[in-house]
Image (tube, rainbow, N blue to C red; front, side, top):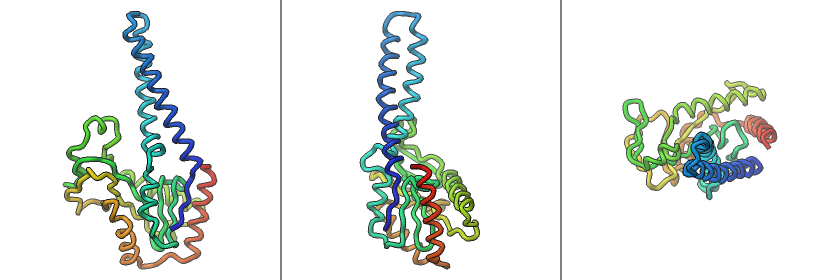
Length: 239
């Protein structure tokens, strides 16, 4: 497998996460000092500092969770994908979506799932039971709305490829897959889910099996070259 990764963007966003996190702590401390200083005239400044500090902390958590953690999500996937054949190329922050895998038949978009508790799909809705309540509030362990995310991702990919001269009818199928990364995440009934849900140890075998069994028209060398050229151009613009 080949890996094309935007290290410059990753480093920059990691730095943004660190600055926002440390900055939020400083501002929150200043707000607390104002709040307990006994000076009524500074109460409004205290409230303002607490609000700004909270917003910065959320931004910091967002960037740190994606770019500052060790290992990062893309590193976890790269380890799982590393024994795929050389006709697979893994794009990391070098495409219209954070992570994208081009194979011999399909475009794959892995979506990391870090929600804890039990995940299921019942009556047309995703359900999450259990998990850390506080982490859900701060958006760190929520399941979110993967259906909408997948639709937005597919639209972004197809629109970009079309803008680079690859019409939609010539583009390969796009397969999204939810990948469970946490050991404390349990799967309930997801048999009717519109997006397949796979545990991390199974993702490589799952991709191989689908590409082997559901590959009606393999991509030609010319098609793969066109896709790689288009995505390489995207990566250059984001560096």
